[in-house]
Image 1 (spheres, rainbow, N blue to C red):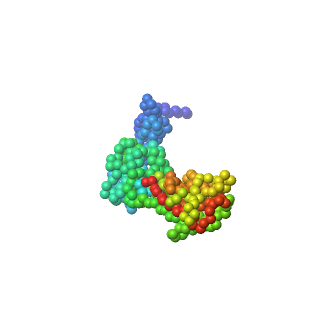
Image 2: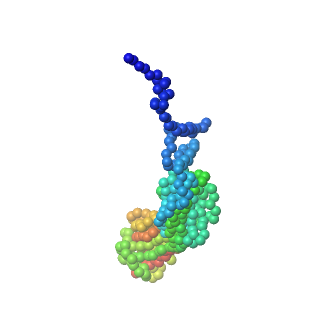
Image 3: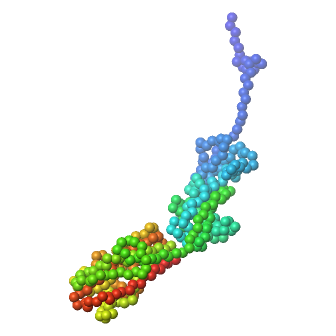
Length: 364
């Protein structure tokens, strides 16, 4: 015997009942006339997405509004906290060349994107008063929109020099970031260093080798042989250093026109010349031998003292630049040869003498 069951009746009967539970939701596409976001998802977290054309901020499941604090750290829950820029780390502040009116500052972007903007505050009184680094790198009382700049604008990893500072003063700097409206971070920790007083160091030595000697400074030429160039065994050594913004100079002059003998009323005239040349019968002058520095500069011999071999520069009653540095310099050191030549017609005497005066100046 065959039997059959009507499927419609089966589903309609009390014995066979299918229960279907469902939850409905609406998924809206994020698009406009200018863009469309595809393949995005929603999780239990939050985040920020951006490009050159748009940005979006999402947050899901916000926590309690109370701040959560621990030693040295703080969590700020809520929508605003999720879109704020990262708080930068403390900047690096140094005085690499003993500056008296500026300091070097390198900011830490703190993981913020390249288009984030940074403002920099400064204080010279432990934050009793605050100034801000302006876009011209000076300090000002007002933080303007133009003073918010990208990390690249602030010099990137090379940093920048905050200028117009007061000598012998400690300055502290701190940084904050923003990525747009409602995203401004808090201030970073502060870091600072001091400027120094303007200074100029200068000293002379007379020695056959690089050595420190004490005044009075006397150099002997020994016996001069007619027709040949005599070079003094001792050299004139110069110590020079300055933190002047544009470096400095060393000048030289003499009280007479050359090596003079009172007993014979004769002067071996100083001249800028090649004393080894047969065309030069007599002469006297100085020639730079060496230049060096610990940092900065460089220290350089100036014309006419920068020749070679027996080419000397004139030393007389006119002041002439002997050495120069166009930038701050530390522990500059230079040496000079003293050379003379006489002819068979030069009167013999033991009192030929020349007195040199050297001075140093700096440009602040």
